[in-house]
Every structure is written in C-alpha cells, then in structure tokens.
Image (cartoon, rainbow, N blue to C red; front, side, top):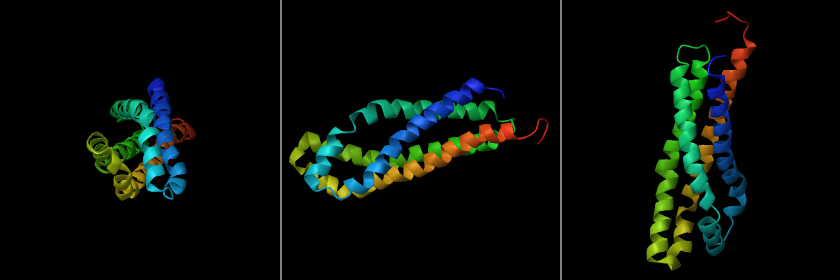
Length: 161
C-alpha cells in the first residue's frame, strides 16, 4: 500500500482529534445539569489545553488528511479516504461556526464583566455542548471511513477493482 507512513500519521492524528470530542460527549450529560456557577467554573478552567493542543492537532489532522487524499486520488481506497477527510473538515466547520463563537463571547465577557459569565454560559451551553457532540459524530464517521480505506483495501484480493 502506497503512502503507508502518511496513512499511519493521519490515523493517529484523527484518533487523537476524535478523543477530544469524545471527552466532551462523555461529560455532556452531567454538565447539562450543573448550576450556572459550577458550569462556568468548569468550562472556563478545564479546557485550556484542549485549545492549546487541540487546535494544532486538528490543523495537522486536516492538512495531513488532505495531503493523503490528494496523493491517493488514483488509488482504489481514495473514496473512503476522501469521505473520512471530508467528515473531519465538516466537523471543523461546525466547530468554527457553532463552538468558536461561544468561546469568543465568553472571552469577551471575562475581560469586560467577569461576573456575567455564569449567566452567559447558561444561555450558550446547549450550543457549545451540542456543537461538540455534532463534531464527535462527524469525526467518528470520518475515522471509520479512514480505517475502512486501509482495511477495506487490504481485504480485496490483489488486482480486484
């Protein structure tokens, strides 16, 4: 299989990126019941490294995935690779359009009026939490497609279409 090293890198990065969204999904049921003060304290303090590590990790996942899709465009596993990469790209667009604006509003509130933060979080928490859950579903589907692009290609006899 050509570009095995790049496939391996994409799979590792995709799995790590998915793990961040999976964490959010596992926390969601409990956090939706938190009172404003606790929810604000948790969300404002717990996710610093998600941004510092998750941002570059997501960008590396997308860049390496796109490179893999371009390099394998004439290979039999291209469609599954492309589907996986597109799912990750869509998850990123969801994050940019749904989750990131919440983060920005909270950051502004922290700078201007920190005491308003708990109530602001309460108004935005469903958008933030379900935005991450949507990203998880898309990334899970993306990783499944990327894994199938490898295992499905190996399952075919040599010379089969």
